[in-house]
Structures are given as structure tokens and as C-alpha cells.
Image (spheres, one colour):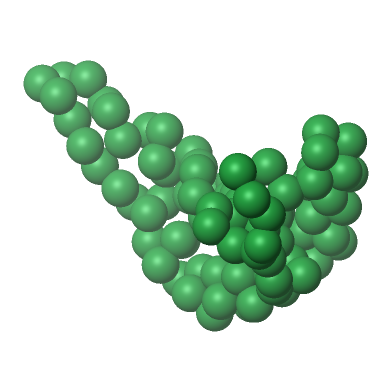
Length: 98
């Protein structure tokens, strides 16, 4: 999910903002969506539970962020377009000529 990606790869502010709004994530534990008699909301409830647990555990957040950093370094740095350094990258930046 986007929030999970931002927690693992975004700036520390993303983590802080997610924690400040964790009540919204926890509210999704009660999400219901049915197609006929088939429960289609279970995926949302499971992901909300996982994200709430992650946000509640500082050590786990740190571990996940370190794993994500190692993967970025292994696979070429800033592939996802998210940079914690705050600069450059992306399209149209810099002075390279094509």
C-alpha cells in the first residue's frame, strides 16, 4: 500500500504523520464490504491491522526502514522516486542533456 511504502521509504516525517493519524488506520479494522455474501473487506481489515502494529512498534519501523534502505542501495538507489535526502532525482531535474 502507499502508506506502507511511505513508512518504509519516506522521510521520518511520513512516519510521524502516520503515527499522528493512526486512529484513522485503526478505524479501518471495522471496514466492511460485501458482494452478495462474499466478504471483500477482509484485505483492508488485515492491512489496517498490520499497519497499526507496525506504527506501534518503533524497533520494527526502524528495522523495516533499514531493510528498505538496503534494497534501494542494492537495486540502484532511488528507483521509487522517494528520497530521504530531499533533493534532486525524478524527471526533468538537473542539467543532463539528452
